Length: 465
Image (cartoon, rainbow, N blue to C red):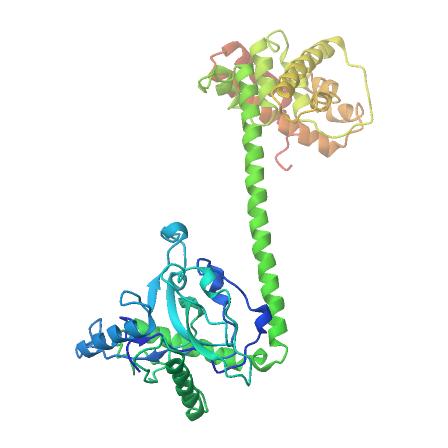
């Protein structure tokens, strides 16, 4: 056989000896500019490549002088002109380079001889040899038919194996007879090697001594032995099972892609909500139009056990200035109690008045949030601040016994203790917040409220609980 590409391999031979797995009428018409065209030729056996040429004696990269002459000869034989090559790099649309993520095996086009049905050989010209239209008519040759050998451009990814056996070709392959002679040569090789045509060994045939290549070859042998030993290797249902598994993996890929789309949609929704929240904070004066945090924003950062916006608004509105420490503790209980209570009691005016101020401030914040396109229901937001334990907390801070306040409500004792503990933490945070703005009077008031709430000898703040 005569030469081929500059890599010491003649890309000349083919999967022409086996029956095609699809009839000619359903043969695909892929595009060489599409990575999916690697499934173009569906033959049962491997695509065979026949080694040619000679390496340099010093095992360096490239061909010897004799190999270069063979390479030039074969390029003249297979191509339509001296400038054509057996393997050439693919180009994208309008001659542009391929995308950066294109796999290496899909970046090259190889001219090979394929066994085709008569009359379906492609007509290659310099203008169409890289396009799908040049191979749109090809059909595999059916069993027991003579067919014809033709040069067809395929993707490098469609080649399955490289043989170290070499056959000799005629000087020119454009006429039909030299190509049919090459077909008879391939059939003769197949007849002589009944057990299968040996593939090119990188170490023995190509003289590669790189240890990394040898390790890869050993890994390939181990994996192939595992494949052969697998019970599915000889299972007659393997094709059907493989199709099912492929469908499953395809569905998994679609699911992952859909999840990514959902996550992207959620991120867009979160961005919209973030813009709405920023509008609310800007209108309430927590930061300026230039997104600079104001004093209100710094105070709100100190609070995490209750509604930061409403508590900050109450502090800056002076709601706690006229209240006693006991009233402050009672009002703050609305922020930490979240259970349902069936008992309703009429609050005294000293507690009902601060509650109305709280609800009015909450209604104002809710309206601003709704106007800023936040998903908030005004009535639900206001109802979230429950006053059922205001009188209980007020009585406790005024010195009532735990057994007495338990009779004032239908809430369980454990729930009362949990509310007291949460209220303790909230008062501490508010005390730190007012200290940050320099209000010593409010700081002292909240410290007194904390002292009224905490009773070291009481069951509510016992160390054992």
